[in-house]
Amino acid sequence: MGKNLLPLDRLLIGEKAIVKTLYAEGMERLRLLDLGLIQGATVEALHQSPCGDPIAYSIMGAVIALRNEDASKVFVQNLS
Picture (cartoon, rainbow, N blue to C red):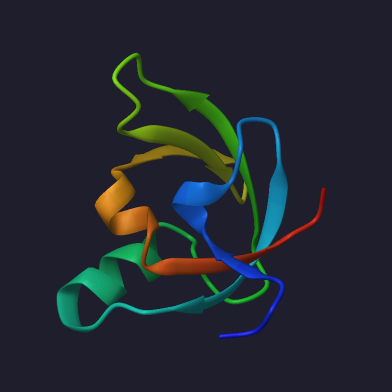
């Protein structure tokens, strides 16, 4: 893992980042890829639920909600 990479669940609301790698396997990996979390995709943290989990993200023009457990397996490079 590089110095500038952080797990997606650490991205603050309003920040943008670029997806660098996924640390998920099998069906979980395929699900994340199907949601648009592919290398090079831009993602923005939009909203957080009142309890903090899940968080809504904008990815490739779609808004998706990810639980922190899933988002922690997506590593991004912050653009902010």
